[in-house]
Figure 1 (cartoon, rainbow, N blue to C red):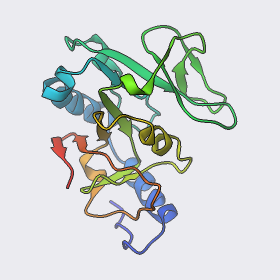
Figure 2 (figure 1 turned 180 degrees about the horizontal axis):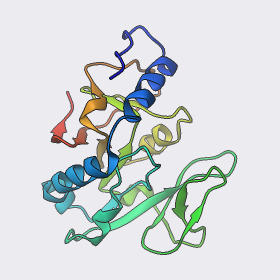
Figure 3 (figure 1 turned 30 degrees about the horizontal axis):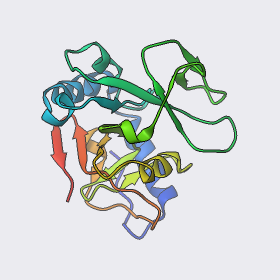
Figure 4 (figure 1 turned 90 degrees about the horizontal axis):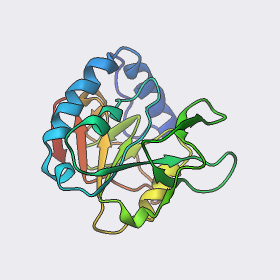
Length: 189
């Protein structure tokens, strides 16, 4: 495993570390473990609307939550082609490939008000125990998090190997309240 950079390092150095660490992980096995914890998590069991992400190859895959006994409606984001904010859409219908190669709800999928989201499950390259999320650098999820109601529960999802004591953060970075990993679901500091 690659040594963590010092906290004084910039986000780019931390992203390099996270990508190197991710390259050696078995995401299929990790996804199953995280799914088992989330299926039993009371806050997700009580949710009416939960936002999932459609995973990239180096992210925990939670899509199977749609086929569980959870009684909530699942939604996902659409990323704009060039500029703009993420939009939230019903999940369960056709998907399409964004120009950058990842899946997202089809443009005809009904749009959902972010204010309807009870639980938001979001990926990150790494998280810290304080809820700081290290994303890929575009800021889309930080902007979406800033539009959620105060009652929305935010959950960072990643392998436990990518949870560190502290990550660098900036004023615009939005923190998550919980972390879901292959070791369980925990509250952040």
